[in-house]
Length: 117
Length: 112
Image (cartoon, rainbow over all chains, first blue to last red; front, top):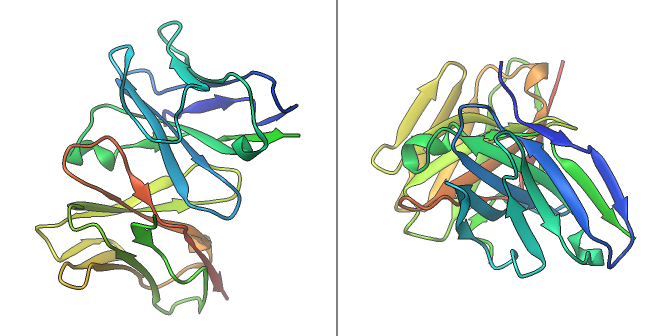
């Protein structure tokens, strides 16, 4: 079964450092997402991406965050200057389409645990 | 801003019995609801969904009920199996937005 792959599974960084979280979405999917879950809290939407541009972002996704699809297979989330409160599990997801009919077919990766020290 | 609430952080059920997981929401614009299951060290996996035009959707052992007037939905698992032990997230979306709003999850443990 096709799956969304995320690397690394764990990332430890110092506050103020830049990190790049990597994802390989399912190959025929066109819509890409990042969500995150701070320990003990709900899963929160960060950003959606389609046709090489951001289609929607949350208030969490400020100027410190950026996303990119540098080639035909990877989808990355960059945090320019990490803060302690960025520590969370970051999930990448992809889908064939968007809207009501496709939300159920949102496939998640197994996540990258980011720890900012 | 907790638009989707799962008030029970955990639930313990005996194998073979029914598990009922509850979810409340506050945003009347939500028109599509989903349940995701999450095992440790894995991402959430889609389980079942329901549109706001329905009040029930069934898929095998899993049934989701929606009460729009009460802004409440529930997931019924019957019979429960040990492999159902996981964290269950309720999620909702409004219109054609890309964004899913998740609850905080309920950890279900099914014991023999």
